Length: 449
Image (cartoon, rainbow, N blue to C red):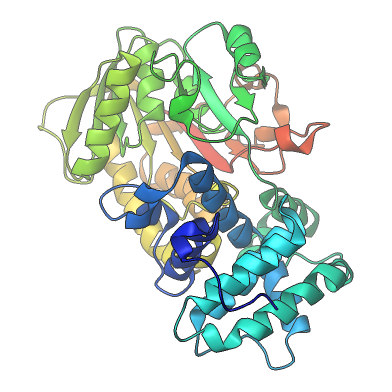
């Protein structure tokens, strides 16, 4: 075991990043705080400011890898621990997860992964007595984990059982397993570019997807990438870029973007020439949306309001985009904390909100106008069932089916009803790092003239 005599934490390269990773893991798994809350904004971990760009990227990758592979990691640790994970020292569990994740999936030498996890435990008063245990378990992990992971063949341990059961019931067991497998892959960086797609793909060492999105494997701060400061592109998953295109030609049209933040779809519509009004209830999110529009040299009217109550009583819109708040289960590959923070019981409350938002959107749409409803959820209640209920209750609306030609010929993402349904296992690629989409649902509705 490494000596208990070591340099102060500030002098041990990489230890600060791992300590902050442990804090953030505890925030997700014990305090039920989202990654976004802990990584950005006023409530972000204060230690992030002290990290170099390299250590910050390492910390983010550590946390994401652990949450993405949490079921597998817990299985491996349970098999290596005779008495289970210590329950009286959360930092011991975090240190084991951090060490094992590096040994199994990251380009970190085993001895460094073990040493730094031991130091992490030694620096915590409650966990320090488990330093020897952490050392022994992680050394065994390096020797035996491959065999222990083989025990999970044919299973999907990294998706909570309630979610896997839902997906199996709706999509079939085979597709549910493919979704789970896709969620285990680290996602690429997707960018919506204003123009010169091929040129930007070359400059960013990526490729242009069939839908026009530029996909790259570059990592680190997006602010450092070419074109960011110039406002030539914005970050947006390829699936998230599809719903706004369902309006067709929008130049000069008045489009209402309800629940608009973080603003990727607002930017799409404004760039296409629409006169956009963007609504969101969060002042901070609207401020961030406006900052992005300024960087992109795009304009939209922004309003802080509750979309279920907003409206001046007489303004009607040519088109309304409703990207409704949802369980976000389609974005787990980019936000792996969602799998461990959401519960089955959350969905009913969200469905009620979605229903109210849909009714409000219909009331603000002019005759002959288009309503595009979308969610980044894989759950049918938040997609197909929500639209079926709306059409049954509102005879002024009718479905306008999406065609394959509108989505770059990707007929597999169009349902029998003509709605959009992307899955994480869609868009295969010879290089799995370039494969996949966020899970999205979208439907296009016409209000009777």
